[in-house]
Structure formats: structure tokens, C-alpha cells
Length: 376
Picture (cartoon, rainbow, N blue to C red):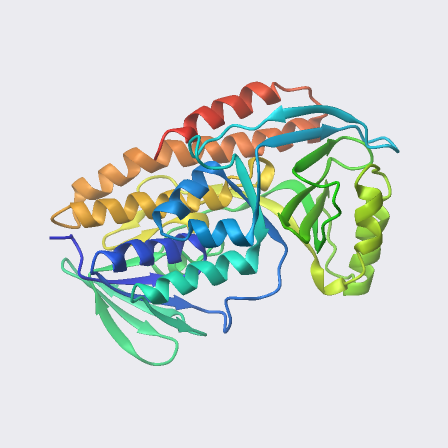
């Protein structure tokens, strides 16, 4: 029998929904809480590397993801000159195996829609606009109080509620999240025919400029700058600033720039990072995804690592007899070093750019690709 029969998952992002799906498929009763009133919200795109696609296939959503997204197998490097000169087109590592693309871009809201639909299909009880406000646990279970005033008892609580996890605070786990010194502008817009893969422009006016196709008619574009306080800008001013910054880049950017007209599709955030020291559980409450480890998107591994957490945690819960020290030790042996290596590598790539240092980027990317090519 599984180690659990009733589980509460806090957080409706990739880590939380994936955990819920895998447990519910095996007959575990799962309640999933999402504090937002609607999971299909406006947003930019997301790049999913092959190891993320491998987990999505195991979740039974690969066909829907493939239809909603745009897969590709190469990475372009372009010069920050007026022509956007192609420096190299590199084969990207197929970290999910030879039968999956190296990477796939898709709208974030589509990924959320696909995952939540699958969760409902397998019997997950999803409660929107609801979160956990109180946790008390003993040796056999966890008593929780929810924001709607209801209460429940569970064998396990999974805190998958993001980088500023409220679950993490409720169980008294201190964790310092720090800015890496970079900020990123993102815009979701239409895809010109010339964009068929991710291209990266290193250097030039800003640290990085790039784009990723997310469907037959869409892409998300991004520019990485020195982290600044942009909070005083209105949406229209944010749009104008991203357009201005993009003028330092040519090639397909000359086709993308005129499509940047909707201020509701532009966002700005800082790159942030943390890794929670092991263990990631306190008794019968465990933290996964960004709640435990968060990395800047320089390697596009954030969602992949969150999905790997879910896959490993669910596997152990379904194949173990008890929620005990042996289970948590196995979870940390399979997740801690791997997630930490990805976070540290992601931060290092950005730090080389900040320092103006010519680091061994191909070597670092190759090491991480080899690491995540092996199933977690």
C-alpha cells in the first residue's frame, strides 16, 4: 500500500499539480489549494527542457502540451549588431531522451490549463481562491485550517506554493532569497516566421536578449538588464522601456519590436535564487519546487526541477510503506544535490556576465545537460 491515503497539496503551479496528478492516479485522495481565483491568467511564455517534457509525458499530458507548444532541437547564438548576425546554431541536448524535443516553448496559461484539466480528470479536488492558514501535526498526520474556515486532516502536506512559500513560513523554516543582480523584461506577442527556435544575444546594450517560440502564432521575448527598481513605471511606461531596450538588437528583433504594443503583456521581475538545506521536510510537511529551490532562468530549468521533485516524491510515497526517515532520506539523495547543482550553475552563468568574465559556458551547460539527461 502507498505510504499515504490522503494528501493536501498547497500551490497550483507545476510542482503541486504534477504531484497531485501522480498521487491521484494511484488512488490517493488529493486536495489541491490555489490561492489565485483563476489558474489560467495572462502571462508570458515558458521554456520546457527535455527533462521537463519527460515528466509531462509521464503525467499523461504530452499530446496536449505538444499541440499547445512549439518544439525545437537547436539553439541559436546571434551577435548584438544591427543585423543580428548568426554566430552559431548549436544542437541542443535532448535531455528527455531521443523521442522528445530538446526544448519546447508554450504559453504559461496553456501549461496551467492542461495540467489542471488532467488533475480534474484523475480526481484531484481543486479549490481555487483558497490557501492553508494553520498547520499542526503529530506522528500520524497533519491538521490544517484553510482560509475559508474549514479544517481537515491529512497524512501529508506538500508545500508547493512558490518562492515566497507561506507553507515554509508556517512550519518555521528560515530561508534567504537573494537577488542575483539581474532583472528581466518579458513580453508575450506574435511569432514572425523567422523565429523557429530560441536565439540568444549575449552582450551588447544589455546582458542578454532572446526569444522563444511558444506556438504557431506566438512567442515570448525577453531582455535581461542590471536589476533596477522599475515599480514606479506605469504599464505603458514599461512597454515603452522594453521597446527602447530592444532597439539595441537586430535580426528577428526588428520584426518582433513592432508587435510590442500591448502593455498588459509586458512584465518585469528580478532574478532571484535560494536553495533550502536538506531536509526539505519538517515531519509530515514537505517543501518542493520554488519553495525549496529557486534559480534564475539562465538554464531554463526551473519548471523542470519542480516537475522532477513531484515525480520523485510521488514515486517514493507510492512505493514506500510509511512516511518515515527512510523515505525522506531517499528523497534528499535523489533531489538535493541535483537541484543545488542546477541552481548554482544558473547563478554562475549570470555572474559571469555581470563580472564581464569569459567563463566556460559550453562546459557548464554540457555538465548540467549530462546531469539532467539521467532521470531523477
